[in-house]
Amino acid sequence: MLIHEQAAIIAVIIAVYMSFLVFFIIAPSLITERLYHKFIRNKSPLTSFFRCSKIGLQIIISEVIMNFDRMLAYTEALSKNNNRAWFHDNHADYDDAKEDFLALLDVVKLEIAQQVPELGDRLLFENSKNFMYRIPRDMRYSKAKEPYNPAFRAYFSPKKSNFLPLSYYLHISHEGCYIETGAYPWESKNLNILRSYIATNFEELDEIVFENGLAVYGEKLKRVPAGFTADHPAADWLKYKFWLVEQSFTTDDLTDFTTFAAAASAAIRRFEPLRRYLSAAFEIPTEEDYE
Image 1 (cartoon, rainbow, N blue to C red):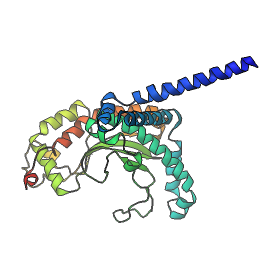
Image 2 (image 1 turned 30 degrees about the horizontal axis):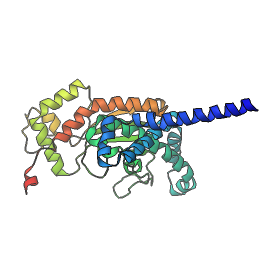
Image 3 (image 1 turned 120 degrees about the vertical axis):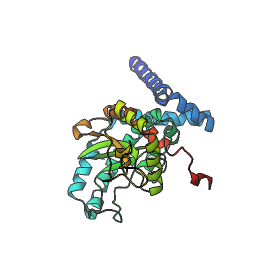
Image 4 (image 1 turned 180 degrees about the vertical axis):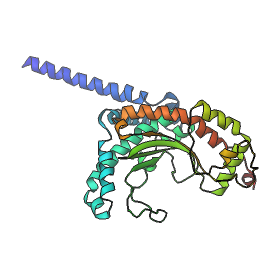
């Protein structure tokens, strides 16, 4: 009996030690030192520490346990049964898949936070639900007749409806996945600012695209827009209406969160020079800023 009691005590001690190790050392260490101290300045050290620990634990659990299976199965089923009756009858499956997607967002937002400081400070402690788009389709602006978008989508910004700051978009469905960034200026004011910036800084854009092996895509005009000559050295860039780059993944690539996080991190590292370049266009004061 004594041996069993001793074994039980040892097991408890080991469990307490491992809990201490994970919560107080491993989990906080997943948050970069710069971001950790940033929030210590804004909040009490104890509050910041426990919030960092919570995020770290979420990431540990997500990378060890979570995978893409429920997300892919649900989007495929929804695409075949895209109607309100099926959606409501299978809402529990949606909740399960959504839970996995939110866990994935926790992992990906950390990768962004570590590589994009100006976004990291604003994203790290934001609830990942705020990045996620609703799955019901906005029928006011869609040509599609189906009421639901069979994909899990997110834009990593505190206010995803705002054009700025430029950030990263994540799309997960049974047909594939991609992460992208760039500029999609739906307002003519922002489009003009970008084109004017590119017109005078096109050599830097050429260099960024070449050095990082980027394939920029986006809707283009047939002619150079008004205000620029047809023989302008940046004529081809100026025809764009939006400038985007993406890293796509097949469903075979979507195995576990750890592998995906590494691939997403590599893509972000390659895309970040372009995102910074496009963002710089809006850091230059315009006449309207002085009105």
